[in-house]
Image (cartoon, rainbow, N blue to C red):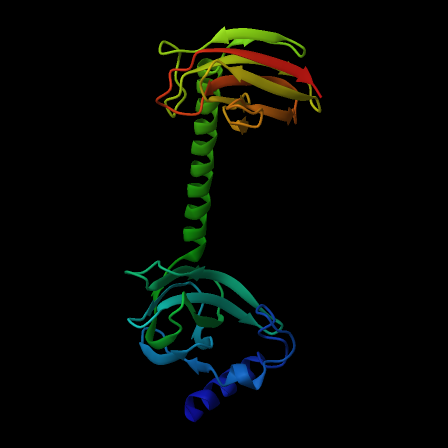
Length: 290
C-alpha cells in the first residue's frame, strides 16, 4: 500500500494536482486531506485492481491520454457497488457520471469518451445495508474519435427530442378528439348523465366532457353531485395532460376541485367514475368562479 500511495502522490505532484482543492467536487474543501490520500490507489489501464470496501469510500486514479473510450466495470459479490467517475484538475474534481446497476446484476458499469488527457478518479461506495466486502475494478480503454462520438450523441439527442415533440403533438390531437365536449361557462349548472354507452378514458372509465374557455389567472370550482355512484372529476388541458383531479372532496362520494388556469385556452372538464367497473348515472355539475 505504501508503494502504491507513494507512486500516486509522485504522479499527482508532477501534474500539479496536489497544489489546490483537488477534491472540492465532493463534500469537503481545501487541500486533499490525508484520510483521503490514504484511501487512493493507482490503477493501470486495462488491468484489474482488487480491494476491500469497509464502509468508507475508496478512491482509485487512472492516467489516460486523449481520445479514449473508457469503460469501467466495478464488480462485487459481497455488496451492491456504486461507481462515480471524476476528472481531476488543479482546483476541482469534475463529476463525469455515476452508476449503480449498469453492469450485470447489481454491479456497476460506466462508459465515457474522454477527449482530454488527464487523471481520472474513480470512487467506490455501496448502495443498501451491506456496506463491506471484496470488489474488483477494471478500467479498459479503446482509441476513439471522441469528437465524432459527441457529434453522433448530439444528433441522437436531437432526433429523440423531435420524436418527443411528435408524440406531444399526437397527444394534443388525441385530447382534442377524445375530450372534446359541449361548451360550459362560469356560473353554469349542468345536469346530464354517463353510462355504459359513454366514451371511455384511456384507463377505461366512462366519462362526459365539457369545454371551458379559460383566461390565464382565472380560478374556478368544479363540483359534481353524482346519482348514487362514486363520481370522479378531472381537468385536462389542451395538450391532453391531466392537470387536476378529485374524488371525494365534496362529500358523499362527490368530487369538488378548484383550479387556476395558468394560460389562456380551452380546458376540458371531465365528469367520470372513480372505478372502471362502474357505469355511472345522472349527475349535476356546478361551475363557479373563485
